[in-house]
Image 1 (cartoon, rainbow, N blue to C red):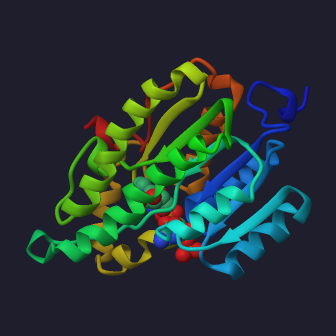
Image 2 (cartoon, rainbow, N blue to C red):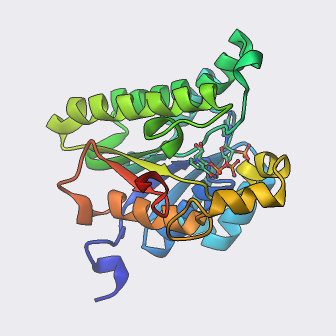
Length: 253
Ligand SMILES: NC(=O)c1ccc[n+]([C@@H]2O[C@H](COP(=O)([O-])OP(=O)(O)OC[C@H]3O[C@@H](n4cnc5c(N)ncnc54)[C@H](OP(=O)(O)O)[C@@H]3O)[C@@H](O)[C@H]2O)c1
């Protein structure tokens, strides 16, 4: 049996992935396609989305470039797509904001994309019956906020903690439709999204930080993508409302 047809396969599944132009979302899109899925890839950067589509192939990857905080664009997008079997809410903003610099404007910037956009996208898709029965919805949160805190990350942590709460309630709401809702909480993953944060840290403090990961090193986008394929596939058909922590053991100690 090939991987397409195993319980972990995604053959004949249509998966919508936000944040697919970069980092973790891009890797999830590539791995889902390898497992047989057709992809709706969302992002803002058209060049990066084009490069993803070239890699997967036009027949199996449709790209959509718009800002997810733009409600009119979300409505227009939803009207023009077929129903999906899986949704991955991965788009997000990672930023350090020392509490002294927290403002209402920065709060809105963080929460609009990390909480409001995935919440509205998901509920609008459901109301328009674009999420099929027995589908799987995955939210990418973070250990930062859903398991632990980190200095300077009050805004980011609160936005990701909100996702943990949202997942549990949504999982209860949608269980009658047999739609599963789960969360993946990654530790530090090497992506473009954390480049600016890493750029401000010295190599000795990065090495010190890596030492806190029992399995060594930071994670890769692929580590998260494998967990996501599991949650999207029928292999997890009795799993809902859970948090899959992918952090090399960071939160163990
Ligand atoms: N990297 C980590 O260590 C880590 C750890 C835990 C959790 N996470 C979470 O994983 C997710 C992905 O992070 P990443 O590291 O892969 O970051 P990334 O490389 O910066 O990717 C972020 C993605 O989100 C999209 N995006 C951001 N704002 C958007 C908006 N307003 N409208 C539409 N799309 C938007 C970006 O699209 P464009 O590039 O096209 O603008 C990009 O595709 C985030 O939710 C992050 O919080 C990351």
